[in-house]
Length: 240
Ligand SMILES: [Zn+2]
Image (cartoon, rainbow, N blue to C red; front, side, top):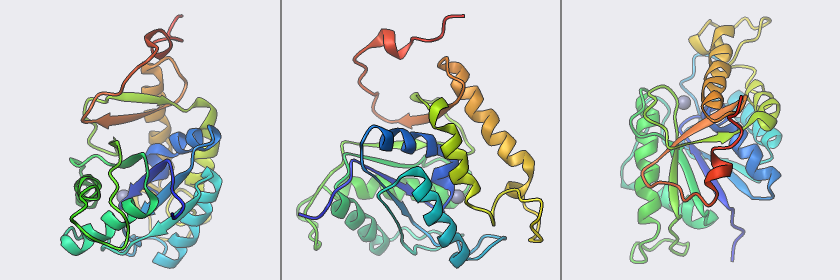
């Protein structure tokens, strides 16, 4: 049987995953779990950089996070397609890598590519388990789809403690030199290339960390509640 991973992260664009859940990936890797990343588009519509530059940056970022692999589909940046053909490509990614858990963008996001990606991955993760949908890979259904949040932030289901993986996570974010703040860049200015954007990202992690007694936290949403074995541990560390 082909190699499998414990966890598979899907993003609409390279860098979505680093910005929202990079610390969680570092935690998985440090715990000895195998993590794969699939970007659904090539990022060809970005104002700065190019698909080729972003591809190099994203593979550097994946190495920093410790992911086992990163691959890219081509479902259309700035108009992500979600037809049956695209769904079959995502079904095959799930079947090929056989993850126990899948991560995806929250399907009610502001950027339509993120919202579409969230729904596409949710549907494909279910359909991947239907044996009668035949592809070159065996049927496989992950145990859960967990959502990371980007802009529209609903009530979160849990927060992952990422204080100790924060530095590595930010190193991975900064691997996207064409996208984020670089005082030497002569590329056009964009909202995410302002220094303020990285401050906002940090402020958000501090906010969610503060809710769970940590310096930095990454929030997630699930449709099913997580099972908690140790409530004292889950709510520990908040004492003054
Ligand atoms: Zn994005």
